[in-house]
Amino acid sequence: NISTAPIGVMKAQREIKKDPTRAIEMLEEVLEGEPYNRQANLLLKEAALAAGWSEIGVFALRTLLEENPRDAKVLNELGRLYHHLGDHENEVEIYNQLTAINPLDAQSLRLGKDASARASMKRGGWTQAESYRDLIKDKGEAISLEQQSRIRLTGEALDQQIAETYARHEAEPENLDFARRLGALSEQKDDLESALRWYQYSADLAKGADTGLLRKISDLKIKCLEREIAAHEEFLSTYSARDEGYAENSEQLRAAKVSRAEILIADAQERVARNPTDLQLRFELGDNLFKAGRFREAVPELQRARQNPHARLKAMNVLGCCYGKLGMLDLAMKQLEEASRELVSMDEMKKEIVYNLALIYERMSDVEKALACMKQIYEVDYGYRDVAQRVESSYSRNFSGS
Image (tube, rainbow, N blue to C red):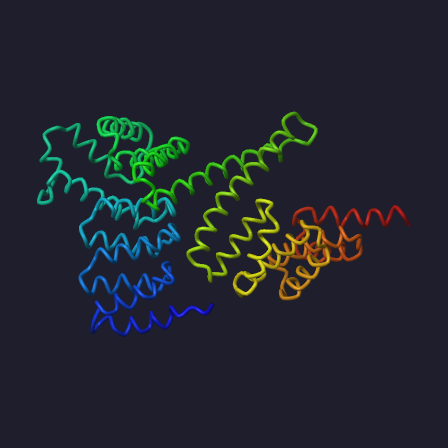
């Protein structure tokens, strides 16, 4: 299917200055068919602001963040919009997300701290004050509020905030803000299990209506699994197969990788359902299906993804590996040979393709072609995987046999 969204977006763009309300109507028609179209949502935000309907602008940007919660450009635009609206609580949340993505982003740190201070002042009714500390008689409360205005708490200050917020939560267990904040504070403390519990509790309170919370839960589950995977990989790299615990760690590593892939698959399937013509999403779904060992399901997704010039070679590589896993060695060879021919320089992508092709040749008992592939990589990257050992051992065999 050919998307008509670009035409609809262009028509709406021409209408913004003369009739922003009409432009909004036109964009809503586009978004009915493609709700996560980036250009349409960004233009909808502009049209909404021109028409004085800021809430629609927020909705448009939030929609894009459902698709990609780490989109820094959209997050910055939403932060500025919340600032314009005087919604400092949400402004703080946005800049917290930006600093979580890039802790070295000094501008987001500064803007987040400013927004947090404004939010504290607004909650206390101090918007006209020169110094809100002077207007609070209770110094303990003043210190607590100042701590809340900091973007990244550590040590005792963080524990104090968790204790205070938990006390508020106990008084109001149905308050979504307190539960969500406990999740965020636990995440700052790097207590991912507690953070997951609090975010899940928050999502239950929201009855699943907050897609941002659901995305956060999914992201944290993946983060926990990635830590587990890293720990198992470190163990396996330190010990040999003969050592105690090696087999158990190896199996746990495999299970963790499958669990991670299953979460990513569910997420990718949901996004593909919303954007069935997006071939990059098709590749991501196929790639994750492959990693989960669901090879037959991966094949049609990867075949379609080949039509995307940006994902083509990656899709061909994984598709070739899929065929190999399914025992279709002739199809695997054909796919990987074609992918290899399309790349001239021996970059990281070609190295992976040629290495996988060598393994297929090896399984087909074509030792000469397998070794030729390994030598191609050896000539440019001695340290790539086990290429050096494979190539050099072939010379050792030839030498000993002469």
